[in-house]
Length: 562
Image (cartoon, rainbow, N blue to C red; front, side, top):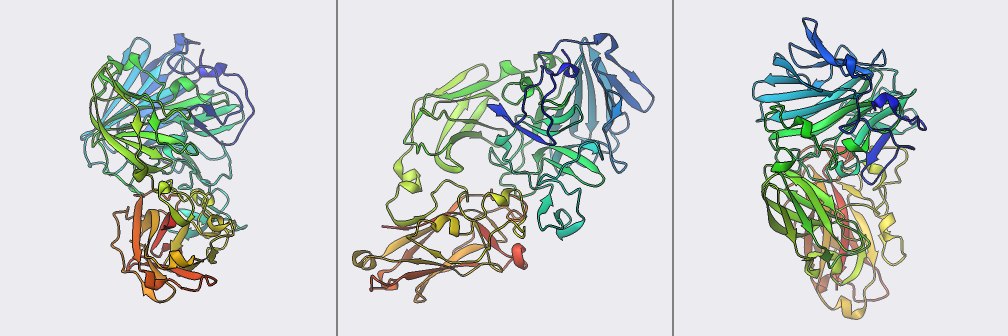
């Protein structure tokens, strides 16, 4: 059946879906490869002189410009959804003059767009309210790799964190805004890592419009990458498939064919789970001649029987990466079993993450049509910093600032947001609230000089100790220099490699995890066991500007080893 046959469900202004369950209140009827034709007699395309016009034989008719490959019309059940501000839906900000062709193969129509070395594809299937897209980027001649679906204003209104419909008060750059009540909005405030969603979009008035993401095998940043997913402004809305974006990027971009990702219309419900990454197979596309296409038979799988040495309080993620491709999967909570299918042949670095902290790496080789089976992976205690004996520890080591003050809010708000607790304030070890009192981010111009108070026993004060501060990213080379009791000050550590763009102010703490270590001599401690030792943490850097754009860093954990 087509997407027009979906069962009605409770309407939501905005839905994000995840594997293993969706946020939508109900499930939509099949609208993907398993769908059957509803009105296939209408299926076909025409050439109106300037566009290829495709009728899916369901409820969707769309147009692609013959001049530049832009998607210029999305007519669903007689209503036009595409476009705002005179702009179309397209790769990046539009490709410009391109070679565009079309062919029909039975129940499939494929439109091919060539712009220099970049190739882009639109496909329609008879009886489906879906558009399948592939993008093959061969080099840097196109600056970023994103597809944006531009949606007319007024069709899907919302006031989610990534919306700025209701405000024009700019507080940072041209993309972070403040409402009159002090809450902040930005298209960057997605709240989600790429592994946390399968589709993005809106539902209202009995219509759902979604982008179902691809598996991101040619994207960059790994499973924990955060980027803009959608926006809503006074002009209209935008839905994104981001494959490479320069904002807070931790990896070099990858090249080659990415897709399919899907523009899907429904009757208000979630898109069919048959379209989700990891479940979508497109054997009907095998013979279409898409440049760089590798079907299921040309791919392999990596599976592991389990993981020992896990901390069962945390989810574990397996990542496969090399310069050409990336994949990931979740380890089973009970025993650590995992399976990562659909992998292109090659040799990969397999990384085991506790939360978002890498605790094990190995090399695996994948062959077409084969399964690379790994014996039980043992994580040495030395690979997990939480296993080290500590006199005190603030937060646990998991590669994220989760648990620290304002940590959750900062994935969908600016640090100046009225909902944020004060970024200043000192911390006392021993009261049980050390983590919630410690700010997730430290800035040179905002809360540098934070004080941590703690007591030591006589035996502890008589020995030297190692202090560790773990960070997840930094802006403008911000890094911690420490002073103990105003008598001993560490050297200024060298800055680790981190993204050079904004991060802490646009919803992302994800950079490169790094641990700073400081060897504190016994002479630095107070010998009176009744007195508090005072640790001062300063953020140092010669870069950055002022306020929340001064040099800063995101904290993972802090501890003093026994």
